[in-house]
Length: 347
Image (cartoon, rainbow, N blue to C red; front, side):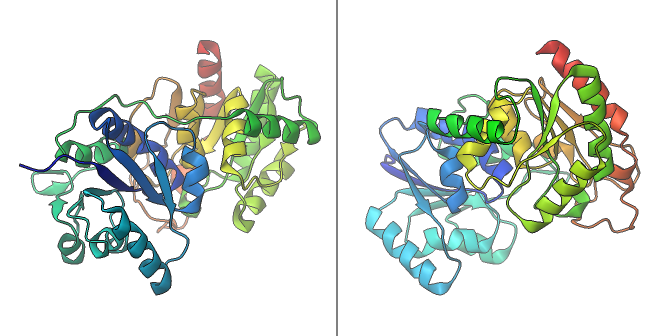
């Protein structure tokens, strides 16, 4: 029989949306282990994203992927004497810290021999008839928690927005000429994954124009702070006919959360802002191309996930392998406008 868990480490998945989809697993840990300390380890961006949640006690940023950073992290983790670690990402590197820190129970999925050796309790990815099957990432992150003998505590995604970031978001909108108390359409047209997730800028622009005309929502375009996403956002803004607002990139995730919280509707590729919107109870339209919708098929009541029925999707590739990007090129803006009408009528 395993000893009681006093201190647990959770290595977060790196993508923004995946970290949000891990919040039900964090809540299950907190409810199931009310007396334990729950520590998170992840990229520096995760700290602002998850700040304010009651499901963890401490955060340990991964600031360097080099050998010196690895040594520093493992020394720090070893002094804390963790009883167990849940390693949610799939890479061998993400399991190395817990292994070198000598955490006795190291639980996570094992897709290759190296990763399997780094874990004390390797889990096989879900399979049917010997083949891996896509499941909701919420469910995928809950399975390691169940390995500890704990029950689920609901599937709702969870984030918090604090007053100071909310004030700064309102200031940013006002400085850009947008009424913070007005109804606006927030558009996030980029994707860190790669171009296969990008709905064409002209489609975003056409949908934004029609949504503004039909429903009175002023389009606000909010790119992430990367040169590629800023360029995509600029192309969307240039293609719109009606007035729109292109914000400067917002590096502070707490302010970005507040911008999403204040929107009447989010129009997004299948990226992290989609999941932030779901966690904050905002309606969202997602344009999905190369990715498999079964990974995110949860909490769909206030979402519309739009796909095009082409034989090559979902391919899961970062760049369209046949070159014409038909899964998103053929996804017409009118479908996003129709989805906007449905969501706004029910909100």
